[in-house]
Amino acid sequence: MAFLYQGVMEVSSTQLIELYVENSIHISIFYIRKYFQYIYCILSFQCEPVKLSDFV
Image 1 (cartoon, rainbow, N blue to C red):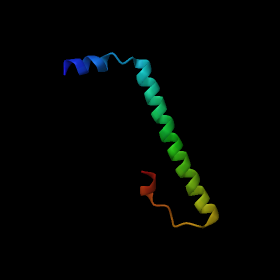
Image 2: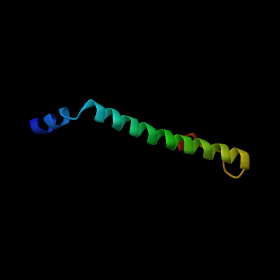
Image 3: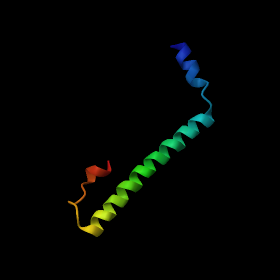
Image 4: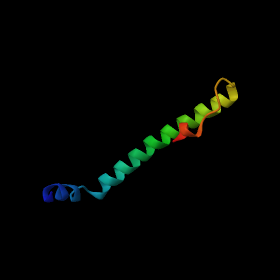
């Protein structure tokens, strides 16, 4: 366990920040795509009302 903990502690803060930013970008792109799909549905009248669960 001590070895694992030491390995985690050696991860630099810059790496953690990069990971965080990367994940944030992925999440943002996901939501932006969902948002555009929603707008497209409204404009084209070609889909069922979007459920809130689709955004979770």
